[in-house]
Image 1 (cartoon, rainbow, N blue to C red):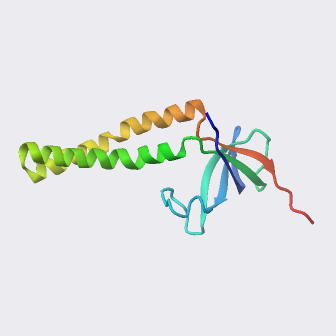
Image 2: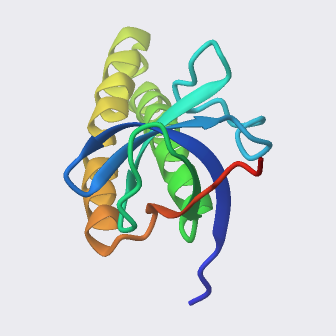
Image 3: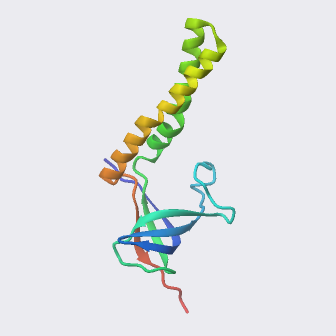
Length: 141
C-alpha cells in the first residue's frame, strides 16, 4: 500500500497532552473542496500529533497522511446522497406517494451517517488519516 503524504505549515495555538491544536492556512488542496469549516480569515483549525514537543506559538511543518482521502471523501459525500436518492426513488416507485418518499429518503440520508461514523473510528484507530507535526520552522534572521 502506497502512503501519500502532504506537507503544510501552521502555528500552534494550543497543546493538550501529546496533541496540538494548529492554525493552518487553507492551501490549494482546500480550494475546490470547501468541506471543512474554514474560518473567514482563510485559516482552518486542526488537531495534530506532537511527537517533537513543539510549543504554543511555534510555526511548524505538518505531515498529512492522505492515504485514504479520496475514498473517505467519496464515502462522506456520496453515501448520504445515494441513500437519499435510492430511498426517494424506490419508495416513490413502490407506493407512489411523494411525502412518504421524501420521508423515507431523509431517514435513510440520516441513517447513512452511522456507517460513516464507524468508518471514521476505524480510520482513527489505524491512524490512516493522521496529521503529525514533523518540525519546528525557525525564522532566519
